[in-house]
Length: 359
Image 1 (spheres, rainbow, N blue to C red):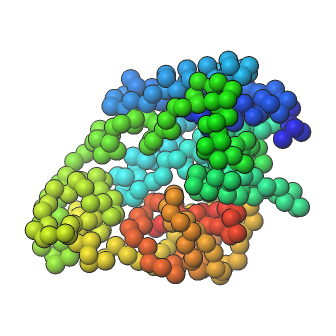
Image 2: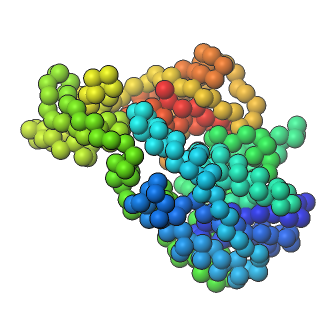
Image 3: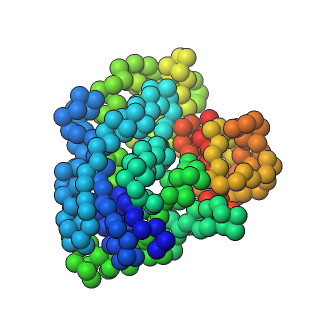
């Protein structure tokens, strides 16, 4: 890392990015810490959002002061609305389940923020992701699973390109979460024992459905079971995702069995449900679109590993490219409740190859 004399570190106010900033400083370079402000609570777009940005930004500032680096808050609110919030709302409105973390990494953190870092003279943008970066003989870069396999965050980077990866640094790639906290505690960082954030920042503890209710009108319809019978009513298809069990408010009238969402009929505005025991949720063949390659393309017909969702274990698939940015993937083992709009990430021997979106 020593070849780049100036580095910007994206500091979230958590322990991982705090230690990333510490290690960047210890490399002997000029370090600038930045906190991305992506939301403000009084914004008309989300009057219920409770993003704890004030607390997080102050935690980040205190760490910056402790380790002796420059720090500033960067206003990314407009970028975040454009590339994360609006696609999230539009996605649910159209019946899919987008991944806001992947959108944020692709367009905001390693997009707009990276451009700001370069404009300010930084040769690298460091983050607290658990991910390794490897330089190849041909000068390209690969993203590789980190030391702490349980914290592997390569999945969320499946839509980065080579220009973005070239700029990126991941200082904690060779550390486990336990070692990150131990290092933070040893040097006395104020974030050493701070809990990891969960969910989407700007929502805080607010449920996605409550947030969406401010932007998507109710559209009541019938809930239909696998026998074609009406078993209840819903307030809008956007409130449900494939595989969902809670929130249906319909009794199963069956011991040790329960209804789950198995489909949506947008033309009829009907929510399809079935008993979990019916195994309707399990499929092995999926169409994907919007293919992205983090480095070079891979064969149009090949065997790969993938993570169907974040934290899912690797699954064996057969990949068959069918169009410029489309493919069919066939799982060796059937998968439960993979929803349109979610992302599948491709791997080979621990190397992230790219991703696709379930159609």
